[in-house]
Amino acid sequence: MTHENTLRSSRWFAREGKDGFIYRAWLKKQGIPAYELEGKPIIGICNTWSELTPCNSHFRDLAEAVKRGILEAGGYPLEFPVMSLGETLMKPTAMLFRNLVSMDVEESIRANPLDGVVLLCGCDKTTPALVMGACSVNLPTIVVSGGPMLTGQHRGQRIGTSDIWRFSEAVRAGHMTSEELLLAESGMCRSDGHCAVMGTASTMACMVEAVGLSLPQNAAIPAPDTARKVLAQQSGVTIVQMVRQNRRLSDILTREAFENAIRVNAAIGGSTNFVIHLLAIAGRIGVPLSLQDMDTFSAGIPLLANLQPSGSFFMEDLYYAGGLPAVIHALLSHLHTNCLTVNGQTIGYNYANAPSYNKEVITTIDAPFNTLSGIVVLQGNICENGAVIKPSAASTHLMQHTGKAVVFEDIDDYKRRIDDPALEVDENSVLVLKNAGPIGYPGMPEVGNLGLPAKLLAQGITDMVRISDGRMSGTGFGTVVLHISPEAAAGGTLALLRDGDMITLDVPRRRLHAELSLEEIARRQQQWQPTWQAAPRGYVQLYQQQVEQAHLGADLRFLKGNSGSEVTRDSH
Ligand code: FES
Image (cartoon, rainbow, N blue to C red):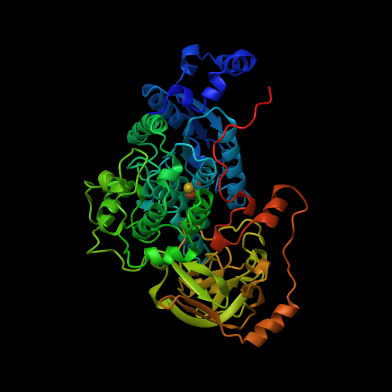
């Protein structure tokens, strides 16, 4: 048990004289009675609420539920804001700012009189950004996710974010009118919450539950379901217990916990963004984890959750079918069951009794929806440090494919020419996008699932091999190779590709290869001139100078690791 005098916050509130006076008096101005600051665990609620992050717009309510739990357990809550990341609105891409937010979170926690932290996470990047920042401090920490939206509705059809890509292609192919697209827009987002499919937000919510950073059922309870607030209140109770028992992030985020997360991600058909965020989180907490681990530990894990974009259903359906606990339960024989979780129990204990109530949504390991799952890591002369593909979202007939490259120097070049009737492209071509990586764009946007040329869409073609150094929305799908490292802007072979080069994708053999001799590559390297723009100042300049490549998690070099939670020197 932690004695009240050993609480970190006692370095502020148990002080005598001028310093203690200042610390307490200014908090009391919010109407806080003196006894609330006497020996109680002070819990920070790190809130990413913002009207500019629509997925997190209900977080003020959620924070109130967390506060009730903290008070109930004898702690005292202090809510604080950090920069929020709205995936749909931020330009050039929310990913550019993930590391910036992690700095905000880290320094806000360390600088303040906090004994434990509740992270309110929702829209895609808010989860990794907050977890990364908290890892660099390593206090007792729990995640409460905002929960997914209710399933969208359009003309009797259930729709979700993955349908945006289908609708957009249907309009370009002339199969859907712009008026109908506008109607669908109004039925997409029916409630509070983040994207209703197994996109990046849901993937990250599943990740935190799989590694033990949240209470069971955190991942899938819909945002408007009253059970979400119950879970938030229980999480408030739990964080106070975690402080009293000094259960820190590093006790939970072990190498085995990361391996569990990779396996669970395979079973749910999680987003490729999982890769880049998990690597970055491991880098902060100091657990060795490599890109290759993503392939190694997801190999042999079949798809157990039938969720879009890999399957048919929505997050709401996952919850009604038993939630992530039912998936983890089905997978227990493949997991490290002794991993510790926030409630002090192990994964094996928490998920021992979690049946699936709907086998169409959550199946068993013996009768999976797809034996192809997880993340495949590709190697070859186009990606010396690796690239990734998500087989469950790809087309079987393209998993082994050789075709001529149609090269776009950047996303603007692609937009200018993709629908040009004169573009030399057919369904066997390989679309190549350069300069969409961390440095080149900058920020590694979700543009990798390039829309197909309109003339091929009109012929009924629905998928082609596409390769890039960018990312893909977790809601996206297709035979899409992503995260090529080194990126084009860093002078990788991707930068040297030209129209007509023969490119081979061989997923079973983990290979992505351009038929170019070493001499030809060397010749092109000598002629290569970088085309990306360096930012003249500010955070973006720092980002471009410091960002690591995708295979390392795209964190900033100087942010890796952690600095602990020592209370720094006083200035009074
Ligand atoms: Fe926020 Fe999809 S846009 S989760």
